[in-house]
Image 1 (cartoon, rainbow, N blue to C red):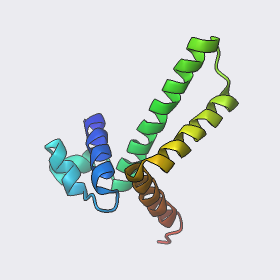
Image 2: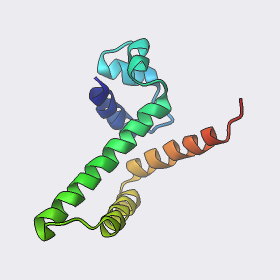
Image 3: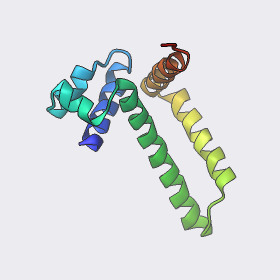
Image 4: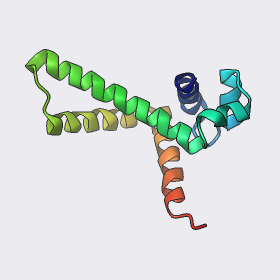
Length: 116
């Protein structure tokens, strides 16, 4: 179910933006109650982390596979540089992806400095 939630959240965050996507919309898209959604993820921020992590894992896997096909090895520094280049390219060319990235990371930075 976590994978389905992550995929639906990714679609909604992309289409509507991170800030405008309510957890109730994600739950509805997955056929869950909000309680069911929060059984799998404690917060919207946790869902955003899962979306971003799944993107980065997929990107790393694609790059590693290409390296192994071409060179039968993987260079961590070069792989990381290529991942960064692809991420910058995506953010410069895809307005919806850029909006998610900015909104999500802006909310994360705000959470780092909250005091209880």
